Length: 120
Image 1 (spheres, rainbow, N blue to C red):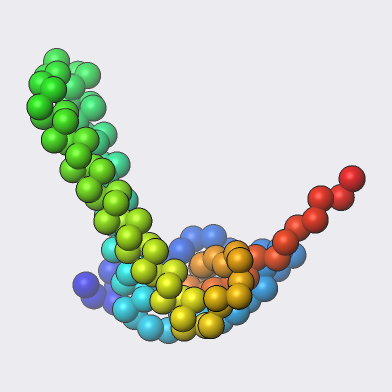
Image 2: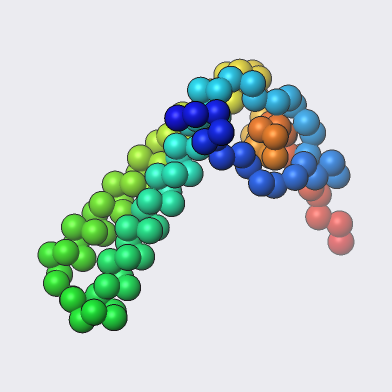
């Protein structure tokens, strides 16, 4: 994976509801984020292709759809595990184990999400 291959989060920091903690500098942590997104994308694409094939080409072979479903499940599971490892790395890097809600924003900015009280 090249540095240009890194997928950056797209959400902007919301200064009203988020406190900026810092910026992720470690390329390996950025790679974990990117790999998890790529696996999630693969999961959806794999399952989507099978469903389109089944619907439009009348190939309703249960075995093929079953294998495709499990391949999609495999990708989603691996993506979730990588995402979990990513968040553990973020929490370790910034010592955020006491924060209940954290997020990642554009530029790999780590934020703590403030509790928003309902105003009645």
